Length: 103
Image (tube, rainbow, N blue to C red; front, side):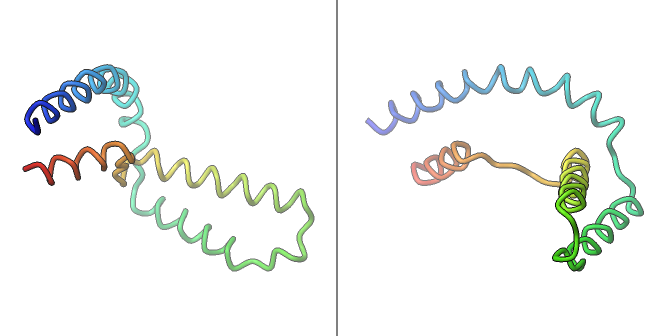
């Protein structure tokens, strides 16, 4: 019984993962060549984020607050494009746990 459930889950996740990997390789191949950040750029971004966090935002107007928020979003997107983190989705984590429990 456990073996058939395991094989069924393995088949479902194997078949659903193929299109995802096929789509991401072409998009990431071009992005990787252009988005590698140097250590100096990363430290500049971190310094700017700390500077924004330490600001007294109570005296700023709403437009200035929106500009700071959009700047923080841009920095966050730039840092994520660098690829220095690993994202594990909820379903992937669940599958890993199930496989570990079965084995």
